[in-house]
Image (cartoon, rainbow, N blue to C red; front, side):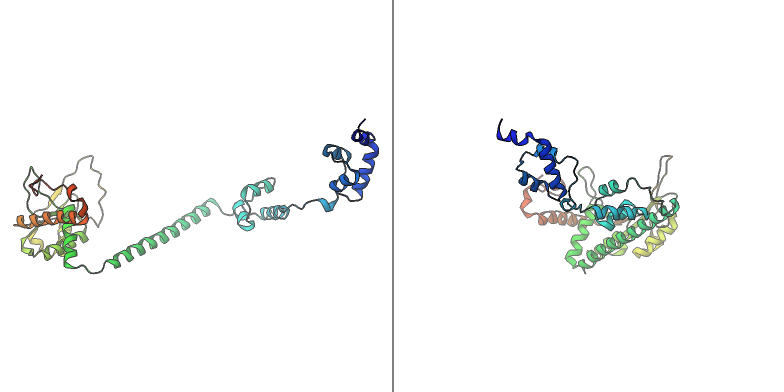
Amino acid sequence: MTETTSKYADFEGLRERAVALRREGLSVRQIRDRLKVFNNDMLHRLLQGEPAPEWTKRPNAKDDLREKARELRLQGMTYDQIQVELGCSKSSISLWVRDLPKPKPRFTEEERLARMQAGLAALRTSQDRERQETKRVARESVGDLSDRELFIAGVTLYWAEGMKDKPYSRRESLLFINSDPNVIKLYLRWLDLLGVARERLHVRVSIHETADVAEAESFWSELTGVPHSEFMKATLKKHTPKTNRKNTGEAYRGCLVIYVAKSAELYRRVEGAWYGIVLGADPTGRDNVRFSRNYSPMV
């Protein structure tokens, strides 16, 4: 029989000594060192059923939080509110209070919807203020345009919205159509810069047949300074059973068509200036610029 085996042979006697030491308040490690029992399984068998002394119990840091969470739940708080109050996770809160009754809703369904709508309205108001502020800063950063800047802006605007000459249809004249009053005002200011007199303008309204044509012509007459009596006959857009108009209401005044008489030479200048803008924006990419067939003999 080995020394170790003989030491554990009197199990009951050893257990009595271990229990006595435990009741004196010793920890498992202290009992191990006192009895020279270094086998953990044997130690647990010797001390089976004996509670640990209070001083050896490690305090649970979350015990206070758990009790507070239960207290707040009983007061009617939701998981979110308890989380904000205590700063712990909702999963822990759920584990601690799941046996408690759910609090009664603080608001009726109508009140909840009203509060939600009020919150959304406040959010939209805040977002709208941000949008308007961004636009204001951008607007004020532009300042007054020089003649050169206005010329470039006008050429770009015309090339985006105006009629262009085509290989299959000679259209060397300025014809512009748009529904935005500010775009029309900028275009007219650009024509002034180019020395185009108002007498050379032929204007007409293009509008849906169900709209108020007379009111629209009066609006555009006041904006452009062209007498109502000098407007050409309006172009009316016919409706079909499938027509589904979105542009309705008092603000709808159709589009204004502006034709500049005897403007072939001016059109050529505009087209040339446009390709000058393209080249000027990317001087290194000159070889990749594609001119219109009518403009460039190299194509």
